[in-house]
Image (cartoon, rainbow, N blue to C red; front, side, top):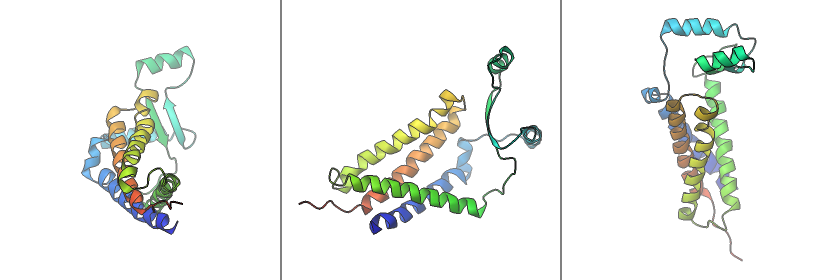
Length: 182
C-alpha cells in the first residue's frame, strides 16, 4: 500500500501541473469568456443583492412570469461567493493538491482491487482511459444539457479532466504491484 501512497503523491503532482497548464495560462481562454471591466463591475453589484453564497439558476420559478423570463433569456447558472477570495490563494492550491492526492489514492485502490484481472501495466491502460472519458463525459458534458451552460467551457473542462485523469491514471497504473498467484 505504500506504493499506492507514493504513486498518489506523484500522480497528484502531475495532474496539478496539467491543471496549471490548462487553467493558469492563456490557453484557458479557449474555455472562458471575459467581460469588460465595466460589465464585471455591474454584474458584481447585482450579485451583492443575492442573499447568500451559493449556486443560483436565474431566472427560476414555476410561475408564468418566471417561465416567460426564462424563455426570453438570458439565463445563467451563477456560483456566488459573497465573501470573495484572493486569486490563486496558496491555501486553495494546497487544498486542490490534497483533493488530487485523494482522487489518485482512490484510483490506486480501485486498480489494486482489480490487480488480479488487470495484472500488467498494459492491461490497466484501456480501463483507465475509459474511466477518464466516462467521468468527464458524465460530469462536464451534462452541464450544457441540464443547466444550459456553454459548450465551449464544458468541452474545454472535459478535455482537461480527461488529460488530468489519464496522466494521473497512467502513473498510478505503474505503481500497482502485480497480483500474487497462489
